[in-house]
Each structure stands twice: as structure tokens, then as C-alpha cells.
Length: 205
Image (cartoon, rainbow, N blue to C red; front, top):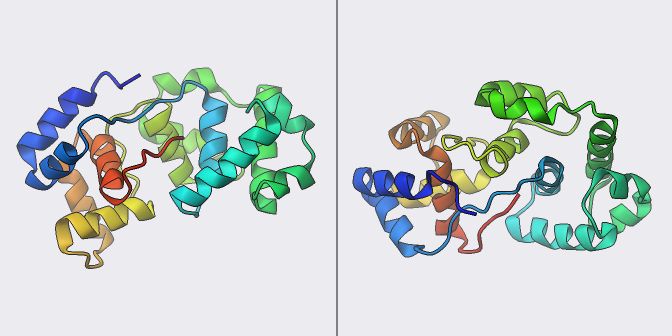
């Protein structure tokens, strides 16, 4: 299911920014694929922390095959050594198991998030062990479908901006923020297309 704002955001970015127009036109039939399950999105984002998209996909495939259903109950039944054998680090195993326990106990207030603004959701999520700002931002983009997220700590976004706008040169955080400001209120969409400019395979969380 395509986010309801997607086509509107594409049109606005194409009109406003020649660089984004070129990237968007090069990828005409793909879009962000939302995930309806909060636990699935967060677990997948934890798996993807600090590794490449390709490596994350490989680990996730093994992990999902092992637990058969990515749910708190199934993960809590799994043995840590088996999760480690899927390619997860010991720390990521701890994080995912802790997340599963919080969902199973009802400690995670999923129902509150749709009514909260982006920074409130980030503040709530980062109270959970193993969830930092980047993971929370992936959740905002892929689960809550927030249209204006700009994950400055994301290496793919950084590289995409460098190549698309600055000839591959390294850029400062201030320059990144300024680029992002010019893409409001559709920074999630712009980020997704900058990822596509590096890797045509759509990222999913």
C-alpha cells in the first residue's frame, strides 16, 4: 500500500528541486512499503542498525526463517544461541528479546503513538533498550508513515546527499540540515529516493 501523500510529495519535489526530479524520474514504479505491525518494524530496524542494507537483509531472512513468525511470543521461545546463529550480535539479541518482553508485558504503549508528534514518539521509543534516534526515525517513516522525517545519522542519507548534490564530497551536518530544510514537508520521501539513488532495491522496515 502506497502512503496516501506519496504522489503529492513526488510532484512537489519534482517541481521544486531538479536533483530530486532526476532521481524520482529514474525510479518511476517504486514507493515506500509500509508495515502495519509495530513490533515487526522495530525488530527489523534493530537488526539493521550499523550494517549495510544488504547485510541486514541477509541476517533478517535467516532470523525470520528461524522464528517462522516474527512476534514477541515466538522470539521469547527462541534460544539466544539460535538467534546468534542467524547472524545477530549478542547485543542485538538482547535488544530484540527485551523488546519482545516489553510487547508481551504490555509495557510498550503502541496505541498512543499515532496521536503523538514525531519528537514525542522518538522520546517514547528511545526509552526502550537498544532503540536510539535512528531506529525511532525508521519507525516513524515505515510504520507511522510520517512524511517529514530526515534521519541525519543515517549513512545512506549522508552518502546520497553527498553524491547527488556535492559531487561525492563530504558535507557538514549544517549543510545536511540546510538541504533538508529545502525539502520540507516531504523529507521522508526525499530520503527514500536518495536511498534509491544508491541502491535500487527498496529498503524495508
